[in-house]
Length: 258
Image 1: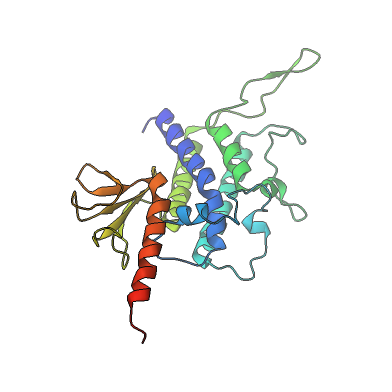
Image 2: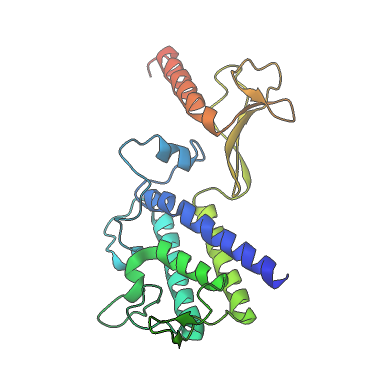
């Protein structure tokens, strides 16, 4: 793999982590569920939650007396630690920014968490800057003199170390959220229009979709995919959720009392 391709791949993985980090934080506060509904759709439909992380302190700096999803918490803690440790490693190799420079990554100490207090988003943005060789040119001072560059260019061996670590964290986050590439039957929830089997399709670079196994004869108000199956895209999934809930209520009403 070329240097530029490794940079592009690692930056893309960092951005994936940032984009889905709020979902992981909400997953920690949500009991584990089956494949349906897709986790990010369930979060979208929870009007009491906001996918914001600015006011949330880093997981490694909090207490967690009773997390509802221990798997998600373990993944979040590990991802944070790895990203913070990677920032420490890169800073030790290329950083010259003086104390007080907002671009500087500050190490933790016995009395301060350093830049860790700014959370995973800041760590990912900072690491991305090193991968892209930002701020690696001498800077002109007010008196016209040149100051040393805040950072050195990242050497290749550290780029590849960063790539391995970031890709591993990206994969764990996506697996924890059920967003890795997989096809999962929606068990016990047949299509409300034809009773066909519904299947959830997820992937790291796509929003979830659902297909019906019946084919063109299904009368659901959904488009067809390339295989002639009814398919609900991301924007259509709330309607499918509502139809499934209504169908389940009808089945419950028709069920004789035990």
